[in-house]
Length: 289
Image (cartoon, rainbow, N blue to C red; front, side, top):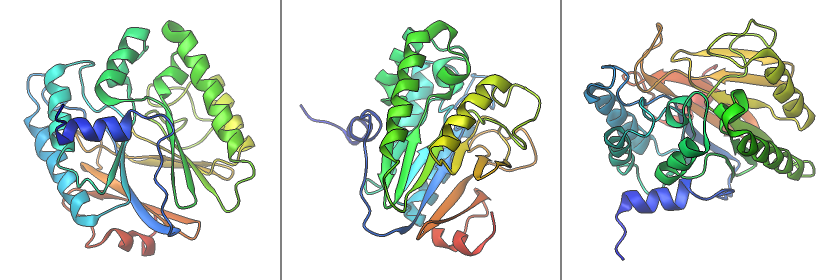
């Protein structure tokens, strides 16, 4: 059986729960993208604008050479749409094979209220919807935040993810010098942990539940998308970072992506428009978030 590169990439990177890459250096950078959302610009009539943006984003990632790229959900606009999924995969196949790709499930990928059927479809097309990865001293956990936010139609799946999450966090307790991050689609909060509930954040009780859990295990950063704008906020030692879209913006922030650098445990990050990216990814280390 002959595998083409797109199929091989999705089999190796996204489909394996607990996939990891060990980097000997503790000084590196990676790219966080969000909301490629093929079809959103033209209400699913076409996706030419998303194609232009994502091809540019992948080309820039190839030029910058990050350790990995993580795409924080809403890969497509219409859940299960074969043409949108195919275009996402076609462009992803252009990513340098030396750069790992990590997909994250968004509400437009698994529905606002995910079901066993929508989860099965996502996993068939994109791989696991929750898993962990490592890079240097970074321990990162990828979550399906739609299951966390609206679990009613897939309660067993949500419970399974929650049990797995606690188990993964417990494994980090005795790891020295670690930095723990979470990647998901929805933001727990945008600006403040006590802000009012709205479409773009977690409901208060569930927000509190996961914040308590993350604090218990010293999670320092949660990176998300969904908002189609940038926002940052803190809850004590935890920073909530919401990243603007590769696809269609809904505010003043342009289409772009975030560069995150880790240098001996010191994390810095900055969002760049697709037409305003630095000459080198490590340049973000010297620039405030």
